[in-house]
Length: 167
Image (cartoon, rainbow, N blue to C red; front, side, top):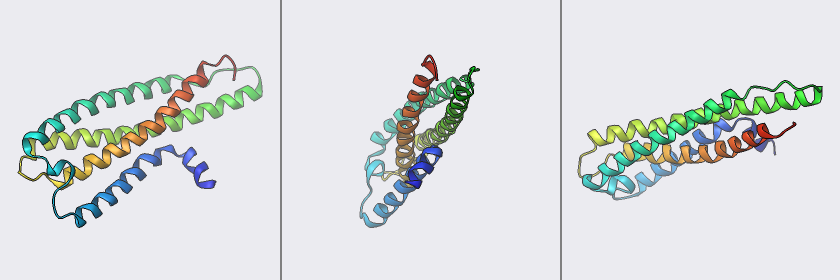
């Protein structure tokens, strides 16, 4: 139960933990597999459009994250009359701050995918794809996906809480 509470207070840990877990699994798969897998198994003519698609998609998602961070930053604590309501509003404002941190960590993994995919377009032209590019893109994708799920749920709750008439 303490672990769940700690993760709830530190949502930013979810994407890096996911990234590390996926990287370990993929490294084991890379050592055990006798042939290339995932993106590495595709021919350059198939891999390049995937990289191009990833750059466009992650750019758009990065814009979404920046917009969400901006919205949350605009939600300062409201001035309320009762001490109880002010205490609740302060806790909600602290939770929004933690959510911003989680979104920014998710943005780091989106940026990782964007940079690696862009480099993949330029450099990954061999018959067998670069396994490092494969590992970083798949790990970054898993981390940012889970970061979006966790942060998106938190963002929805923050907006709903903010739109309530009273706290």
